[in-house]
Image (cartoon, rainbow, N blue to C red; front, side, top):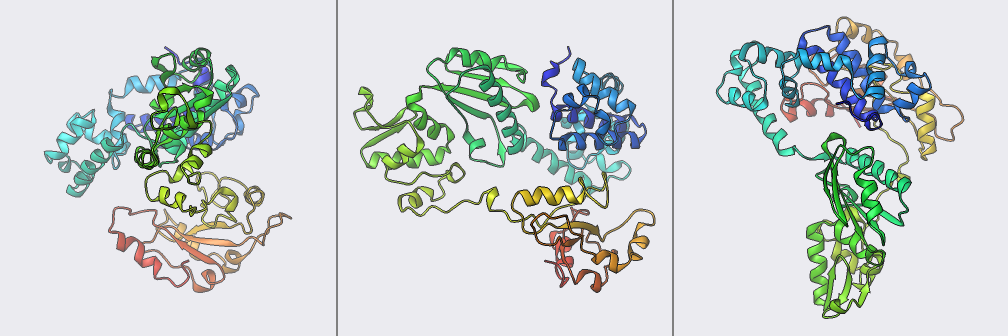
Length: 475
């Protein structure tokens, strides 16, 4: 059954294209076709407008690497909810084999070999074979590789069910936009760990203040992004959207907005400490408000409309959600000594950027003028233009690199009249290997150099990092 085309946003389309690339390799087809699908997927994730809008305007060709087959797959996904190419590959590849790719260290070629030699099609079977020592009997798989696969499976199971913060907030903001368009909402906010900006998120919590919850609940469970409805109640409902993310929506009376927002933001440890402090003041704090002990039954709250009111009634400053982890923030708020959090407005430049070799090796994802303009608009004082050097280069790239004119490498390029300092160049020694040809001192000395390990990531940490960090030019 095709999915509703509305639900196929850029991320969903990119995920399907990535999976097509994986399936192509699993089937043993041309690896360069797989690379093309993945490159298009990366480009789509970087777009600032929906792919569906590009299709409607006949502008799909603006996405790099979109040939006829990729364009056809994207068009089918948007118009019908499924791709014939994707469906044909799924039918041709053994069921469950693609799940092996979720294990770090198991790429398409390794997964194909494991399936061909051992008939493995699931992570459970892979784990059993690794524990039995059968993987190391296969070509190019050593005992250490087998051990790393077991560690990866354990790590995968530990993080199952959690999502990265930017994925969670993107889904939450999409739902908030839908609810605002379909209903008359006075107040709505993200809650829970998403509001506290934890690195990974379990479920997404949304809170709404409204006198009539019914129309809001109906709009929530029927939103275009909803794939499955888990619960539909009078004041609380739960749905599943793309990526398997669960969103819980709760509606509270407008008078209780502040207390409810504080309570459902958490963390649990913060709330427990806060309630303990309230009890010492002979006050009771819950999701409905702050009351004098014994007055809650009469509904005579001390504060409840805003978080600021509740914190002030407890004798402390308002605590930013990011700090609510019971790490001393309550004592700091009582002493009026909370730290000032850094914001995007405090940034004066990003000195660690990367090129995107798959798009344009010399320029990165965007032209230098565009990158400089974007950073200048954010208040940047200097804009770096990195170029990656060092490491093992395929074919004859390393000799060509060593013959480059140092004067060209030192050249400083300005980015129009942007009101920022002259743009400098950063040299990024990306692959710190012993066999890498070092750039000459007169190339690195005028600039600054950042060293980062991009390969051989399973080597001992000291071996990967200490070598380059001893270079006197490394920042």
